[in-house]
Image 1 (cartoon, rainbow, N blue to C red):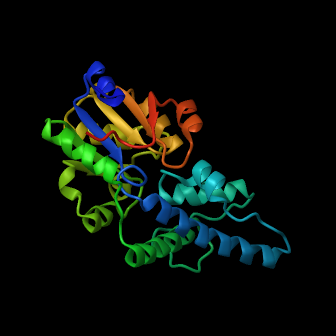
Image 2 (cartoon, helix red, strand yellow):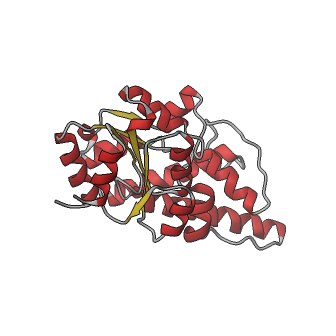
Length: 248
């Protein structure tokens, strides 16, 4: 018996909740590219206007620390704060070109959509294979994402049938769910499945997602280390960390 299977049995796990970007699909890389394109251009323009130099976004450090796994506008706010910049919130309808949190977030989403059309959606085959086997055993499944593009990504990848429930950025906004590291999105997914958190496992590739799983009292929180961040995931509270899901 592999280590993950042993953990599932020992903790009486009946449901699995997967973060979409970085665990199931390889869209985390696409998100990071869109964020960098948007922020680097904005910081360069602002710096030229002010006669200052702003450090561009570093995907290895800044993306992981301020943006990864949380709602879009929170990511804008967090990163700008790290550069000593505060902008008005604006409204979700703000078009690109307005100097607001919402406008920058909307521009990032436009870039993400462009990249998605150009590159398509790649899945992690190790996740899909393992998930299919667990479903055959009767395990309940849900997927969560801070992104408002969750359903589009699921359909583009052709994997929507693998999940009974999904909770994404659109629903989080409608329900007033707090972003990670608050556990709200995971708790809502467990509620929809009808399984208590103590009998549910969470699979996350982001530190804030792992923290959210621990804060929600989930029976098992597994860190999926796609970006060589084992120490960070463990420090955030992951019960188990591995790079790939076990094969047969």
